[in-house]
Amino acid sequence: MNEKESLHQDHNKRWVIMTAVFIATFMTSVEVTIVTTALPSIISELHGLAFQSWIMSAYLLMTAITTPIYGKLADTLGRRNVFQWGVIVFTLGSCLSGLAPSILILIFARAIQGIGAGAVMPLTFTIIADNFSFKERANVLAFNNTAWGLSALVGPLIGGFLVDQLSWHWVFFVNVPLGLFVALLVWLGYHEKVEGKQKLTIDWLGITWLTVFLVGLLLAIQFIDTKPLPALGLFIIAFIGLGLLVRQERRFTDPLMSPKMFHSATFTIQIATAMILSGVLIGYQVYFPIWLQSLYHVSATGAGLVVTSSSIMWLLASFAVGTLIAKYVPKWIAVSLIGVMLIGYVCLIFAGHSFPVWAFYVIAMLNGTGMGIIISMNTILSQHLVPTNMVGSATSILTLGRSLGQTVMAGIYGAILNFVIRLQLHGELTFAKVNRVISSKQRLPIPNQAAIDPIVLTALHMVFVAVVAMLIVAVIINWLDPNKKIVK
Image 1 (cartoon, one colour):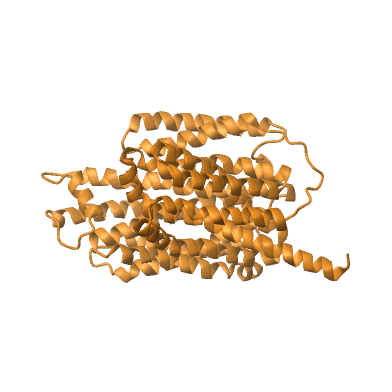
Image 2: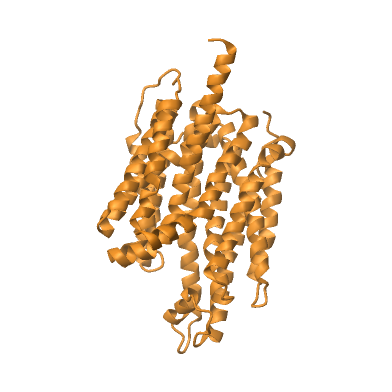
């Protein structure tokens, strides 16, 4: 084969890879936005109000548990086979979810989807790292991020259309042809050589303790507000599991998550920063719309545009990552951008009833800009700082950190909101009346609203106090990062 043919084949392979990971990223990211839109119809038809939280939790839990396992398998068996397995399982789970006749079968099918997503989500980044140089990687990641942004924009529209015109079942079926296309594309056009095929040693105890930690932690978050004593017990179980996991990984010869990766302070800081910022992300995605709808009576569509504006800026900003890390020390990029985000959230802590609506959109856009740059930079650096044979594990740990940040902080924000509201109740004001104000879609005044609005505002202030505290931690750890300018 001459050099020209070799270059042509390499170009075709890279085109196939970019197409496959783009569609796979879109599939897994649109899953959240499109299913959220259909939840009311699903709950109504399947009479599943008591189990509604598990429609999302089953998916997130299985994704979190399997992500580091797939990262290890990909480093040992190769990316292609593990990625294709993930796509097929995710597609099967989507099909079963669409066919589900009851809420319990739907939750089971969602868990299967999560098992597949645990492979797809981190391996899209790992495959990009394998096939594109450090110089190219930032732009390729930015292009791939457009799939996430596209899902944020069209997911609710597609979900709403399918529910209104057909039924909620089609919300899940929409990913089936996409999954089959990606699987076919990978099978025909993506080939790799697994150099020095390693013996696969499965760290069963590591997997067990990881599962105990994650299941205990995520269940504790689910129960923290309604059942505090069981939640406390689950927290204790979770941290025992974490301690045993750390002990196992230090002793095992071929660990699930190698402690060697965490010997680099910069690597550890990338994981911690991505986890913290993902927790901040879920804060403004959930509580900006609540603030605007309950206190300003902005329509659901108008409030949703806050998140959309952030997504657009995230996409645009991610294209600047390559240029920025070529010119500046990464830690100062992170410190500067987190500092700007911090100023916006501090303003929210002191925001009164006269705080302008447009300011929420500005803060969201600054938030999207900062995260688009920093989280893309976290991905690139975490891959760059580990040996080649650990890139899959490193990427999966970053993905796990982001999932944990969102899941854990979603529960903590909810607990803060509910606790502060209950603390302020007096006289005829009940939690149900406050809940009516928060969930109301009406623009008309509600009885006792003048007394309830300050209660809701104070509770929202405390939610963003937690956000500010997290951002301060992120600034400090990045300030202490010993990293220098990255050499390509």
